[in-house]
Length: 393
Ligand SMILES: *Cc1c(COP(=O)(O)O)cnc(C)c1O
Image (tube, protein in one colour):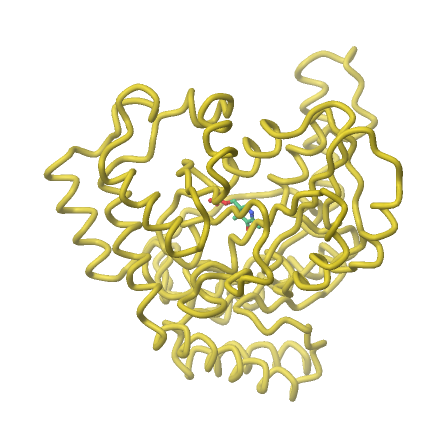
């Protein structure tokens, strides 16, 4: 979104310069850092080694030998690119099998693959809603959901975070069109989980559809890692899963009815006009998902690490968040203080990211700590010690 004070009359350079200056002044300027070691447990940057507490690869599948081998084998057999959109030439028997597998695993009639979770969310919302509709989204919904909603012809209404009563009030507003309720399973910054059962009770009988973005739930929550809606009673009308987090690869899928799938195939531009995921990547995703499904031991390791971290952090006087998932935020508040803390932790060999507005609400800058199944107890000890030194110092 453009900052308000930027007028269109100032010319390209001035407009861009104003926006950049505003970012710098508020300590919210973003920079990327070229690390080595991918998103492994240990990463390198400028010849130093760090313990990685920033990765969403919660089960460590990006480095799983079977996943790597699937990608390599199928790249040799079928090349590295899909050659076109799924509507032209990019839809292979691998894509078809994976879609069937996903629909079956997650209990929906159909699944459609997308190149990313961002594209899936954007496309689904933009293709479904029309003028006169209401989109009722949790206030802390991911940028891809809000972006689509803001630029759609529908009216966007936001309900208080994880608050079914707030949603209920918004459902009382008169609406001439259809209502789409949007929320996340595990929230990407807070790590807390949506109260799906309560939300569904509020929605029941209103004719609204519930869309759930379970990017951070799939693979880690519920039986077989089927995500936050693994129980039938919590199933949404539309489910979006991303393969860039716990599945360790990238790509996404929309789970829906037969009718919605056919509708998306006719009208979703991100599907029709974008090159499909390469078959080799599909093979890697498929192997990774089979590991997700059957390796409860990885989820168990992750849960142990989460419990170990939370027990430790309680002793050090940092505010413990309510999150019981792999995402463990330390809310600091001020942008500059959060940046400085991240910097000092880096000096101690701990790699963390300072999350600042607009990624989080104003005044809620945080260190986003992510735990994975690959962390060792000694890694977590090092993090806890570094944090406790900060507290003392
Ligand atoms: C990461 C994320 C996305 C985007 O998914 P990609 O596959 O990375 O594009 C969407 N929603 C949420 C909640 C996310 O955290």
